Amino acid sequence: MIDCKPLTQYPPGSLVTIGEIKLAGPDRLRLQELGLVMGTPVDIIRYAPLGDPVEIRVRGYHLTLRRHEADLVLVGPTGS
Image (tube, rainbow, N blue to C red; front, side, top):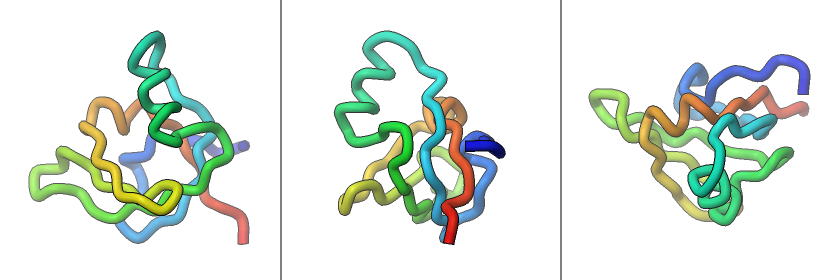
């Protein structure tokens, strides 16, 4: 993936693909167990009114991430 940016840099309605997770240890493992692995497409559903948490759809279910976690998930636009 060439142009990876934090997940929070994309507006609601964007379809992106996970490029990298910058978390380490148990936090990284937890996100991977939830289905956030490299190459997985993710729909950004919405941000809470104050921007935290972020709701996404991944592998057919909705998941909310704290903003500080979402900032460490690097994604890029999904190819057509």
